[in-house]
Each structure stands twice: as C-alpha cells, then as structure tokens.
Image (tube, rainbow, N blue to C red; front, top):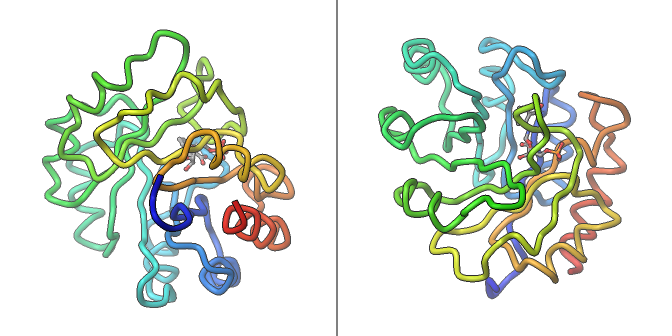
Amino acid sequence: MPDRFPRIKICGLRDAATVRLVAKAGADAIGFVFYAPSPRNIDVEPAKALLAAVPAFVTTVGLFVNADADWLRQTLRELPLDLLQFHGDESPEYCRSFGRPYIKAVRVKPGTNLLEYAALYHDARGLLVDAFVEGTPGGTGEAFDWSLIPADLPLPLILSGGLHAGNVAEAIAAVKPWAVDVSSGVEASRGIKDHGKIVQFIKAARSA
Ligand SMILES: O=C(O)c1ccccc1N[C@@H]1O[C@H](COP(=O)(O)O)[C@@H](O)[C@H]1O
C-alpha cells in the first residue's frame, strides 16, 4: 500500500474546461485518447491546444491502441506527452521503441498471468489492469474480479475498469493500487465528461 492516497488519472478529456476542472479537483494525471473508434478520440491539433493548458505537476498521458509506429513517432514530435499508455497488443519492443516512459494495459480475465506481463514489460512505469471485454480494447465501464490481481506484482499497479465514485474507495481498500484510472464512471453519457462526477470520484478516492 503506498504511504499516501493512490494517484488518480482521469482519462478521455476533450475540452479545456474539463482539463481545468480535473486539475483543480486534484487529479494527478490527465489522459487523452488517440484511438479513432473511441467516443473519446481526440485529434492531434486540439490535443496540442489542451496540453498547453495543463498546469505544472499534472502528468499528461496519451492513450494508444496498436497505433502505427511511424504515425506515433510523428505525433510524439508534436505532442509533449509525459507518459504513453499502450492499451492494445503492443509488444515490449514496440512500447520501448519511442524513448518515452510508458505504461502497459492488460485486459484481465480468469487465467491472465499478470506476473508474466510484469516480467515482459519490466521497464514499464506501471501495469494498468482493465476488464477483458470481447471485441473492445477498453473504456467499457466494465469491472472485473479484483481477486485475479496478485498482491506481489513487481510494477506499480494502476487499477481501472468500471470504477466510479460509488466503488472506488472499496476498490482501493481491496486492491491497494498505486493509482486508479477512470473514464466511463465520470461521464454523463459515452464520451461526455460530467464535472460533478469527476469531483465526486476524486473526493471518494481521496477519502479511501
Ligand atoms: O477510453 C476509451 O475510449 C478507451 C479506448 C480504448 C482503450 C482504452 C480506453 N480507455 C481506458 O480504459 C480503461 C477503463 O475505462 P473505464 O473507466 O472502464 O471506462 C481506462 O484505463 C481508460 O483509460
């Protein structure tokens, strides 16, 4: 268990007012989704403008799903993202080829060997665990059985998947993650962030 509250990442931001609100409410990290099929997808130019509005000491994360390596290399020349989140089937070699800190997402189902993933992606800054939902890479709002997470993972654990203000304190108590990450649980509808839900989520996570 970390000595302080887990870090909090709010993912899937698409407008400046929400970026400001999230930072002011006390989130540690802000995520931008670069995955065209997602309702939270953002293009490079608007993302550039939002990144310029993020205050100091808030980590900016770019989420990618099996992105073309040349496209991503070019995109990273334009975007000063602090951390890359790989949420597809990216290999360890791919993840480390961009020369930026990264976290690797694993979609968990019965039988998933998270210790094996931690060994494969040993240079990741964290292992993000999400629910396995057939046909969708993530951002589904579905939770999974947290007892599938081993207690002795050698990487910082980022818990995601179906978290919301009503279950995040219980999740933190049960899993003791390094960080929590949320998208659907702080939305009014798919892709539309709800400022009240964001504030409630951060309060609930801080009170755990
Ligand atoms: O947010 C998305 O649209 C998304 C698309 C593709 C892969 C991952 C995505 N989001 C990440 O999924 C997890 C869980 O999200 P949720 O809270 O259950 O909606 C989280 O890490 C998001 O960053």
